[in-house]
Length: 485
Image (cartoon, rainbow, N blue to C red; front, side):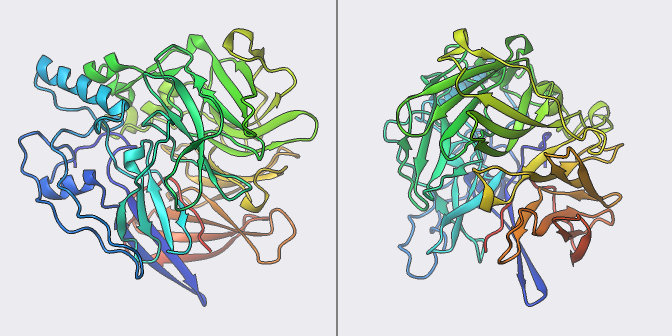
């Protein structure tokens, strides 16, 4: 396989079912068009002249569900991945790629991969389905959570919500609806929208937040949201068509972005009541992949936790999979930060934004200068929380290789580490009937030092290891997951 970046490749679902003291493992690839193309050609990218598998019957659906339409053959053009360069023969190929990307961003063609490799959340509880997703709307696939069958692409209804780019980190509202963003690269801006579970009808909840640089859209991987507000983060890392075509930044770990740290970081808080009320804040340059909990503190502040990097370019380059200078490098520094936005002071736009400093990080020594994939007790999400669980480091480390519990009140951290192992995103599961915020267990899939995998079960309060569920095969490093009771 010829991919060169950790964000590239193919989405694999891993299911661990725990019942009566036993754990059952399953894993299957998401049957996206990108993956179907790989199965047909044996290559990650599909050249226009490559033979493709003919159309076939649609995938199976759960009993009682309507049949899905036949699956079409994978399209012929190459797939635009995150950090793996395309193979372009010359200026004509470059011009075609520019046209394909422009049409793709407008929704008239598929300009980027539909590889649903980032996250999986609940979709239709009655049918027992979830949705595996990536950062464009073509990459959302409904999956059966029991069999891991791919049921088909989510048929989004756009309803005047412009933009083909989104995040793989939707937020669950108190109403049970999902909240996400549509990023109209090259267009109006960033629109917050909501939809009910199992329904692909997108409904805008507020006017679009304008792009900072006209038609240069910021890359947004995640966003914080409370019960009453959502925050649109715009960091100085922009989608750049020139970089897309020239591929000048491939060696930096991305092939379509431009990092301009002189611009600083912008946060726009949007009220979710439909009033169109916004508050804008500007801070020194930084970048966040992921956010933890977000809540209003009762004193007029919107509070949210985040993993913070000083340099987006360095963090993306650290995920490149080729080259001794990168593979042997240390993971770049990141830190746990609790932000507080004073909602009485924010401006309407960047020109009159409220200027704030980045708050001081917590537990830098205990976390060994790394914090990622934050998780909280979802039963308390949207309200004040004290604890977060996430991945940290025990250096030297190429990736985050430990699990930590962060106490935002005391600033202390408790860490679990298994030498040579790489744990994935932790997931907090509350004990039935629990009243304390940290009463439960933390689960994480782990790539073990011996080359096999296991599920680790930790006491969420003490971080002491309670159990391991072993499998006798390896699992690739993953990103996100969820507990489906």
